[in-house]
Length: 256
Image (cartoon, rainbow, N blue to C red; front, side):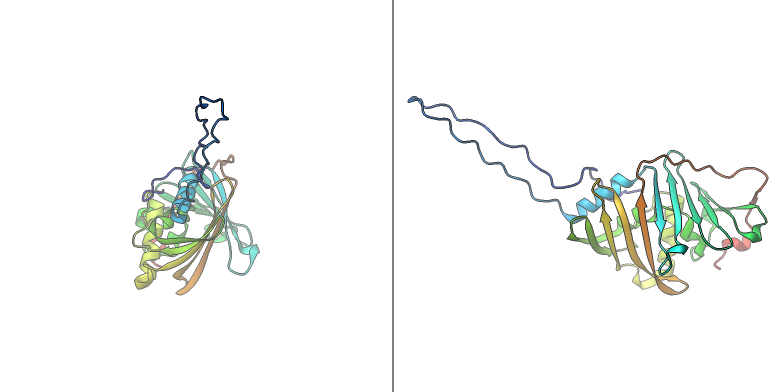
């Protein structure tokens, strides 16, 4: 999903090759000249390192946890199947165990008692820009939001802070664009200055993204905290099919 920054996936401090050589022996048989001193190139800019981590994390299988603000039992589990380009979002606590499957064009909602065992399909393109359902159209949201970086600094090795301009972020899928529509619609005049923190693990993958998104929590500012893991591990997600899949009514698409 990273379209703004085109960088390599190799992270860490770049080292130049050691320059070693010997001078020719003098005519009197003197010792060879000492090797030239080696020098390391400057550490890459924080924005470059973070962009490289986003690039490396793009297009691979992974798992994630969307953290609840104050109760770990309410965390939401996520996964992404890169081969089929399908994501899943699963609620693991409560009476209803909601599951959302997000494909290239649709989201499938199941697990709610009101659905009576059915799975409801919604067309992503038809979801209202201010509908909270737009929050669940893309499980890789940080990879999209970080295309709108305005400035980045590194507070410690592997830890970054900065500001996002959501109006500059670029989504490359229907789901990522719908999520952007949503955050832009509710953020209004605050969309250009959203603070974030992020971390990159030792393997160079984006490990965590946290931002306080304006008005995202029922009109109040809400913390969006997603932790990635299991990079490249086997993940298979199947698109729901069959008679239990029903079309969402028109009312489901409107702002709730």
